[in-house]
Amino acid sequence: MASTIYDKDGRLRIPNPDEWPVAKAFVREAVTVSAAFCPEGHDLVDPDRAIGGSPGIRIGFRRPDGEVGEVVLNPTLGCFDKIVLSSELVNGEELSLFCPVCHAPLPILMECHCQEGAVVNMLYLTRDNDPYHAIAFCNVVGCRNSSMIRTGDVIRAANLGEW
Ligand SMILES: [Zn+2]
Ligand SMILES: [Zn+2]
Image 1 (cartoon, rainbow, N blue to C red):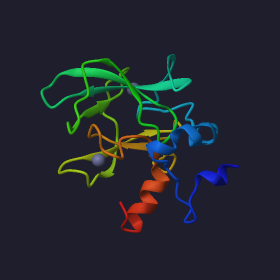
Image 2: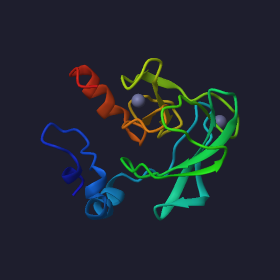
Image 3: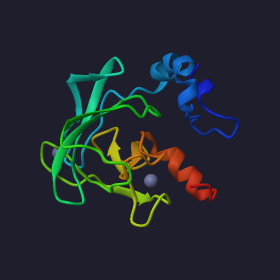
Image 4: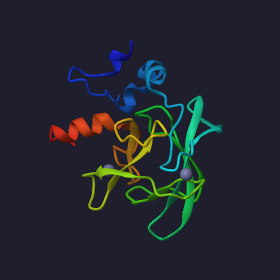
């Protein structure tokens, strides 16, 4: 079953928004994250903040002007919907992302090519901080990489020169 979400090259197939109503059911089943850890081991999946029918991932952000807010990310990889709990998200702004519990900055996997200075942040799927078992997303609001994807797919794409 899970193989249907990968393309012929073995990469995660991220449906474009037009396909979501059809794709969402099986995608959610296969790749909804149920735990996501900061570098200090805090699980940011918040059972009190459902989004798309599943507990969302709550992260803190700091905007370029210094204003601090919190956002809940959809725990299903490839889904862009978010709930902004405080402050606001403005397209094109580069955010500093951090754990809302300990305020540790989210680790950086690599640069994102969407704009100068953009980076791909990670949350670990296990408490041993393994970058190969993590989810990743760009820190620029509205970047097409701002929904969550698997770090393994990012690393593979980068190795192929496709990132
Ligand atoms: Zn933390
Ligand atoms: Zn980006």
